[in-house]
Amino acid sequence: MILEGNTILITGGSSGIGLALLKTFYEVGSKIIIVARDITKLNEVKVQFPEIVIFQCDLTKQTEIDGLIVFIEQYYPQLNMLFNNAAIQYNYDFLTEQNITNKVYYEVSANLTSTIKLCGLLLPTLLKNENAAIVNISSGLAISPKKSAPVYCATKAAIHNFTKAFRYQLEGTNVKVFEILPPLVETPMTEGRGKNKLTPEKLVVEFLNDFKNNKYESYIGKSKLLKFISRVSPKLADRILKNG
Ligand SMILES: NC(=O)c1ccc[n+]([C@@H]2O[C@H](COP(=O)([O-])OP(=O)(O)OC[C@H]3O[C@@H](n4cnc5c(N)ncnc54)[C@H](OP(=O)(O)O)[C@@H]3O)[C@@H](O)[C@H]2O)c1
Image 1 (cartoon, rainbow, N blue to C red):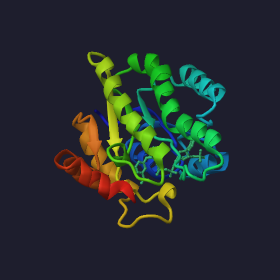
Image 2: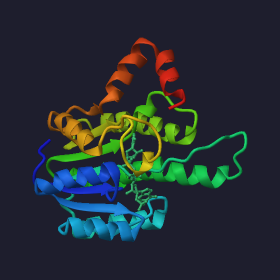
Image 3: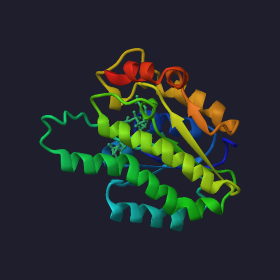
Image 4: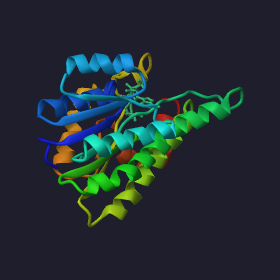
């Protein structure tokens, strides 16, 4: 993939990994559109990076996704990269949880359903443009889940599987399909938990190396080791992640 001169949509580009992706692509001269719910955060990022386009959108809401697609088709038909990065993570204890229905619906919609929808709805635009890519962000937790966030882990495992099958479907087209499998990264999502976290900036450096070389599954940092362990001893991989 060529890093310079792209038009890129980054969901969840106002924070953490999405923000680090934005900085990197901004510096090499790409047009960037970011999507998130919180307009204050979006405006703050716009002050820092004045050339970006911000679009307020709750990706769990179909009408707001529809609005985003119309906006892209009308104003940015040259869009050639989509980063499906936005996600949330809820903790559950299914033995005591009182609000399963709403939490599950929201988390699956934000993490998984919206990713699949954007892949489908933006595909006609991406198919028309050169150097086109879709990058879905899953997680090392797609390989082995942790006890505290079963729905999050399920959405990430599903993204991993979906991304592979979707890549098969697009073989022979101009759109390349990538996946990033991050380890624990220092972002607002992981505030107050875990140690020795990777910075989002280091994640992006590792990813870009894979991206430039068309390596479609980008296992980052400790996720590489996890992949190896899970092949040699799936039980050991499960044990390591269980209480993560
Ligand atoms: N941090 C880690 O350790 C880690 C590890 C593995 C994988 N990942 C994955 O990496 C990606 C980025 O995570 P992060 O750690 O950078 O998280 P983060 O700092 O919490 O950022 C999440 C972003 O998603 C946006 N977002 C959340 N729900 C949304 C919705 N319904 N509609 C639109 N935007 C929404 C948030 O903005 P608003 O709140 O304003 O909407 C924010 O910009 C996620 O897919 C995550 O699962 C992270």
